[in-house]
Picture (tube, rainbow, N blue to C red):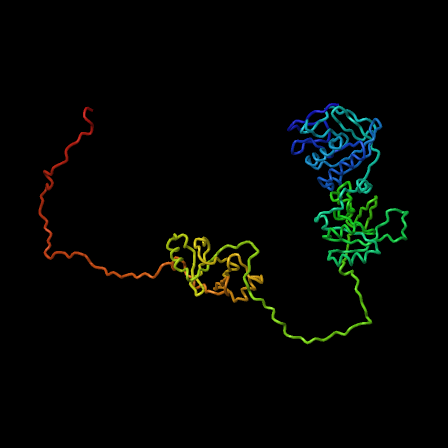
Length: 508
């Protein structure tokens, strides 16, 4: 048996049931992987579940116990070829554990593509299949027939595998302790609930009895326990619970399963969540024990489960108290250093003593720097408000905007830190007013109508003289007359004419 390399764009093949996918790779409906032992197949499931979800393969996944023509037995895993990308991942992991990879549809499966043939292989000469052979795989130098002896359901394989202990698995990071499950013996449940409640651990609890897994189990014994779900469990409490008999800690592995802390299932249970029915919850214990609890899990807050002490013999009558007006709790507004990022500077408060310096700066600034600024002169200082480029005036206390129209010194904040709406209501601030906080005094308010444009305010009042106009038109002379003399028939006869000029240069 020989194989041919598939060429790019090839459309006709000898192998039945295969065709090129959109990438040009030869692909059948299924991908078949042959393993010498069951451990090899489990290793492949372990690798694949850590990289991708097994749920997309479980619908058509088949684990076959097969026998070769020479009497050897192998485990054959058949998965749907969802795409060449998924097939490439499966083939890469299968070759990593020493398995053969083939693709096909029904009876004949040809070797899947590798580095030597990027588009796959095609079997050149496919003969008649031997009798009592269920399917054949075609390799580089051989064609191997298989006879099915039985199938192993994936669910059965999953629950037969034992969880394995992880070195240092009890040391959980903060995000791993975000949600854990505790199984507590009934005799310890009340004390554990009080302990969690006193330490302010968010938790919910419920009483469950796992279903029987064998007909020989003692059904008369009490097999129930308290299941407690805790969130953000502190590390010291986790270490205490791990060392306490009667308390076991489990980590969620998907929506309907949990594995003991410090252990891990060989197959990632979160990648095959569809295996667990929605009305069950599986708890994987050390020592091949799996409890199936009725689901979905419904738990109650432990705050409602704490013991309430009642003494009806010592009931007390309610005591009447006279009401009184509440004492005022008003707090004086103050300015304190701001803990947040600096705000944008929108104004400056210049002392009146620096008015001369402001005039000199305005005289030297270009018109572009003054445009858009407004100024108001008050008894508390000169307030200059601008939209941008306010740093061109290096005078006074820079102010930033806490809320529209409310200005506070840069790097400061109002305490107590109430919302701007509450602060504006307390100060009587509203539309048409500008409220200015100062670092060394009480705030003051200026009406918006008091502000003028800085360009207009920078000019002093100019005295302009009004000039009178005069009429310089000349008067016509009194005896002016117009005389028309007769010029005759040839008025321009004998008027000198312009000399004739040659049109061509000399010698032409």
